[in-house]
Length: 194
Image 1 (cartoon, rainbow, N blue to C red):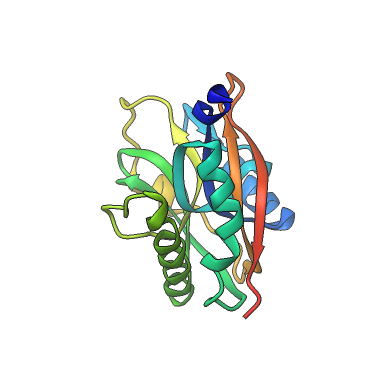
Image 2: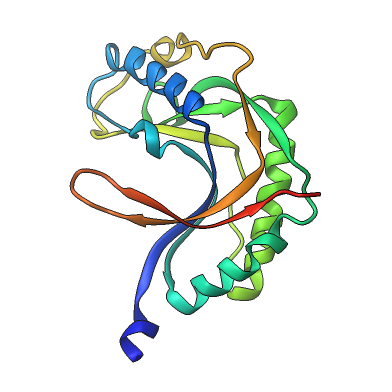
């Protein structure tokens, strides 16, 4: 019994993306691949929008999150967000993470949703993020820190206009790290029903 209590799972809460959106983002990855070397691209089926990374979580706490997940979204009605531009953290010239952003008019709704998730997790001992929430979808990570890219390499990539993702639920995921990349498994969903 003690072993089970001590067991942890790497996990996060996110918005799953429609297959059509994942396919469009894979096209963006393939376009960029020709111009940017040495990037570990996120597999299309793994592309998502993270609301809160939880890290290693004990099984009893995960069970509590599963039970409470619907309460995190009870004040939020379903909405759409539109994919916007391609960018990079910390800078487009010296990127570590390649991401796709969300249009400004939708980012406020996503911030509200992330804040509700954050608030719901607080009683379980999860600390508030130090940085403000920035709605983005990670599509790749630069393997080497030695590369410097011309700024236009990233900024010239276009997202098809009007690419919308409906937000109808949030999902608690388990993440298993493997040499071939992470494997994500949905543990629980909570629909937005307001």
